[in-house]
Length: 251
Image (cartoon, rainbow, N blue to C red; front, side):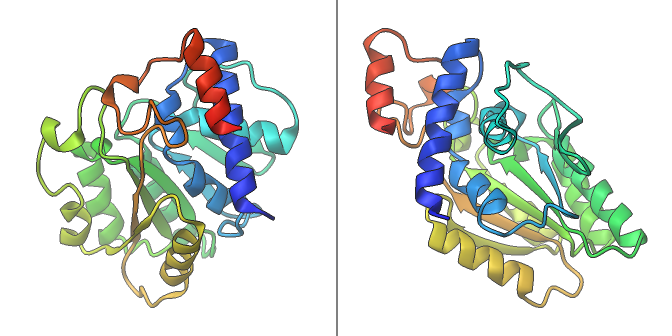
């Protein structure tokens, strides 16, 4: 499969779905498109056994577009959703409030470990979400239980809902994973070569005792120039001539 073409298709669907339902965080959805495509179309996940948790729930438009693509059934909403099945036997969870998803993913990973399953749990988080104390607790829990089947992927787009992440609370957010003993890898979140190589390295490498955290360097609003890197577009939608400009950028 041409992953670049699929990413472009998903980006167009994100924009059109947001315009159709009149809700959704377009810029936050656009930043993790390549991560999602690498997981769902690039062979990183086994749909028969692996599980996925979207902790950055405000980026759900990406997941909606992927559900539509696989099922060929348009989603009409709702705005935030939780505990829905993407495909029979393969639950994908949107966590709701920020900070909850890693704990959910750790619980699923522990259940698989206790069952003797080799299934893996993938969890996508936002970088600003790491300010939440619940993430710290889940990170400690995962390392304590040696959840080598847990993979956290940070969508490091460097923005929160109102400002640049470092200006909201400036500290080494990623240090919590290294400090708690996780294996940490860095890569570009928009380069399929780097994403695939990092996933292969992390999933096939020797992590006898540690969960894996991948920090993916991304751009919020990726693909629409007037949104890229602009904190003012966290929840705004294009209007008037901006709609045509956005569509042309994603064409």
